[in-house]
Image (tube, rainbow, N blue to C red; front, side):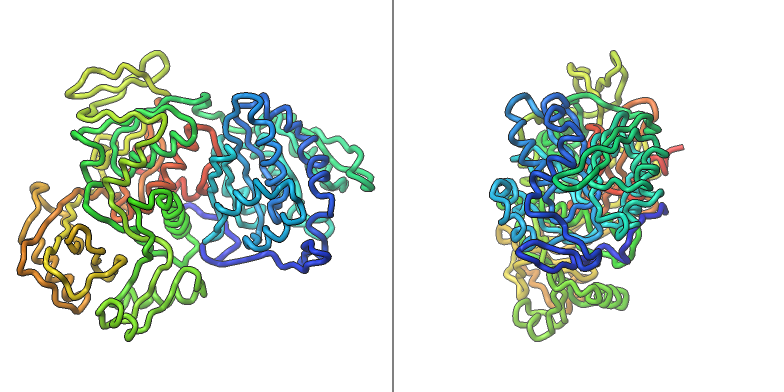
Length: 611
C-alpha cells in the first residue's frame, strides 16, 4: 500500500497552537515569536498580496490556486478572502482555490479572539468560522460558496504535507505565501527539502512572497528554479524576498477547460454526489439513469446510516475513512429533511469489536466518542450491553437524499437511458445507449458511477446481494439512532423497524427472500440478545452490493486515452465514502487541488485492477 506521510500516529491526534496572549495577540511558545503584529492586514498586503500581483490576477485569471505554508490563525487567508470578495464583482469570477499547511490548528475560539482586533475581517471571518470544525488531522476540504472560495487546509508537518501532494498536476500552485516563523527558529520550514518540494509543486511562472531575506532561503529558492529579488521589507524591516518560477517540471494536466460539460452514468449516491460536486465547481452536468426514476437501484433502500468504523492506524485507508465520514456528515447536514444527525451507537462487542472499542477510547476524543455504561444502555435502548456512542453522523433516506443532491442548478437528469459505451467525437466524448438515440451533447469527461455497470471495465469486481428486513410490529427496542453490532437496527420509518443485513456472495436473482429475512431476524436477535416481534408482516428489500478484491473503493481515471473516470466498489460504506471521492474526481477534472493525499488516491486508483 502507498505510504501516507503524516506527523501523527492516527487521524484523530490533536495538536493545537501553543500560545501566550500578549496584549490580546498570540505569541508562540514553541518558536518564542509573535504570529503577527498589530498592523497585520497592511503587512499581509505588502508581503503576500502585492508580490503575487493578486489584485490584477483576481480580475484576469479564471483559475488560480494560492498555496500558503503557515496557516497560523488564518489571517493571511481571511485578508485574501476579503480582497477576493471586493474584486470578484468587477468581473465574472470563478472560484478561488486556497491551499494552506500548518502543523497545529487553532480553535474556533482562538480565531474569533484574533479577528476581534481586525473589524474589516469580521464578516468573512464569521462566515469562515461557521464552516470551520476540524474533527481530524491532515486534509480538510472547506467549501465557502458565499465567498466563491474552496479552502484545502492541511494539518501536517510542512515537508510531509507537500510530499502528499506530489504526482498530480491539479495540485500545482500559482502563488505562494511562505510564512513560517523566523528561519533561525523554524529551520524545518525553510529546509532545502521543503524548498525543493515548493519548486516541484509550482505551476509555470508561479510567484511567491515572503517576509524573510535570509541568504540560505534565497539560495535554496534559486537552486530550485526561482528568480529571486531582494526588495524593501514591510515597515521598519530592511528586506524581504519576492520572485517567480523560471522553469517548471510540473506534469501536464489531462484536462484544463473552463466550465467543462460532463456526463455521469448512474444516479445513486455515487452519481448524485459526483453531480452535486461538479455543479458546485461550475460544471454543466448531465446524469443518465437506466431506471424510470433517479436513485432507483442500490441507493433506493428506505433508510440507511453512515458507518463510522474508524481505524486508529496511520494507513491511507484510516485517513480516508476518517476524512470521508466527516466530509459526508458536513455535506448531508445541508439537507435536514433527508439526513438526521442523531449520532450512532455500537453495542454487544465481540472480541474483535472489543479491541476496536479500546482503540477508539484510547484516542481520548470525548468530542467524538462517548462510552455508555450498561445501566444507561438498558434504560435508553433496552439493551444489556455497554455502548459506544459516536456523536457525529446519523441516518438518512437514500432516495430522497440523492434526488435533493441532483436538484441543483446546472444538473440535468435523464431517466430510461441504458448506457452502452463511449466514443470519441471532435476531441470530446459521446454516449451511446442500448434503448435510446446517441447523446446529442458531447462531453469533456464521463464518470461511470453505476455500481455493477463498472464490470465491463473492471471484471474482477465482487458482486453480492444484501437484504434488509422490515418489522411492522411495535418492538421493545425502537432506537432514535442506528445501533450497530455484527448487524444493525435502524430507527423506525413510517411504522417499520429495519434490521440488516445479509451478505450473499452467491445468488440467482435480486428477488427478496422471506427465508433470508427470517434468518436475518434470528441473527439480529442473537447479536443484540433481544426478542423481536415478528407476528405481523415482514417487509424485505434486496439490493446489489459492489466491492473490490482488496476491499478498497475505486475512484479515478480508467482510460489512458479518454477522459473516462470511475467511482464505485463502495461496499457497505457508500454513503460515507461517496461525497469525498466524488470531490476528488471532480477536482481532477476541474484542475482544483485534491482533497485527499496522493497515497489515498493511489490506493483507490482503478488502474490497480486494469492491465
